[in-house]
Image (tube, rainbow, N blue to C red; front, top):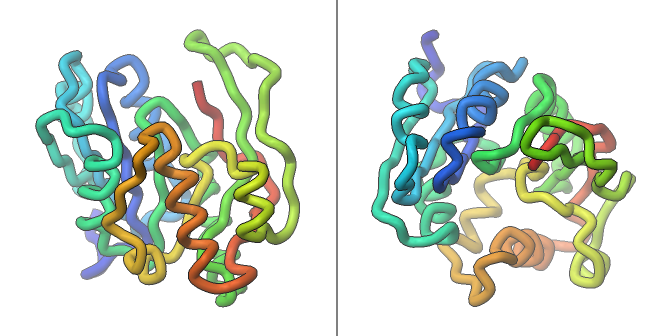
Length: 208
């Protein structure tokens, strides 16, 4: 597939020892109805077959970065630095998207120039794909800094799609609590200007 000079959206996938799941994650990104994308996969020194699985998938939109293990924040920053799209979406190596997720978010962002970051609903499955009954809160409307600081209703980093330009104002960044790196990033975006985070109210992600 021939892509325009710059993709409309960059998907950043960070992967570490997710050989059992990375194929489904990648296919869910490549099968999006929004076609003009690049998929940046940062392998953070996996010791299983993750790299082999990624390399077995042939699509010109994939950009693979194989690094020595340095942690999720370093991998996250490496992917962001390479992103060329007007928008960025994040996908963990063990999560999958519904096919129209990216198109829905990009349409919303284009219709709402005051919004920098969007998120959607998610539900959880186990390793066999069975529903666990756990899901994110079905939030609607905007989300302020104080609301997000009190209650992380975004819940999963793979639900987020945002504008690249404002995000670059806070990146690269360092969060002392690695497990909370995504929430830390979203809070920093929320501080850029008031009222710039909103939910796209649809179930668009499943994760393990």
